[in-house]
Image (cartoon, rainbow, N blue to C red; front, side, top):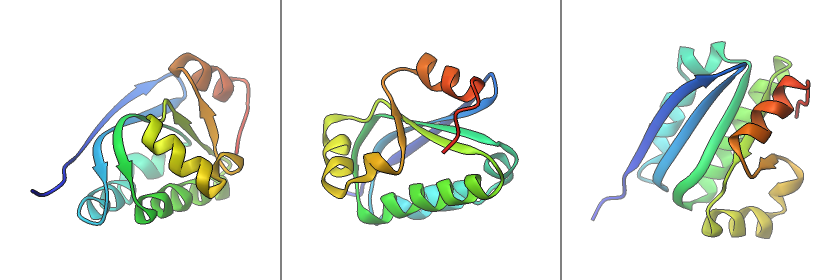
Length: 120
């Protein structure tokens, strides 16, 4: 059975919200990587990635998040993570990534942080 990743976007205030659902693994990382290389991501200064429906993330997926964050930082932007599922939160904690990313429990908190000028 091949894994699947669904990517949905919407704009809320100053941020592009990306909702990921499914698994982010070796089969689906190219899909997210291609999406992150597109104009929508390039032109959005602030990104919020909603992880609630993401059941698994591999090291390749983590690399995409880190690359996106580096890209946004270089352009005075920010990447905020939202609602990581228990499995994804465990990966972030094991790798010490909570020190690299701003992780919020609600969409409102993430948007408010961006509006307040809180950047990575």
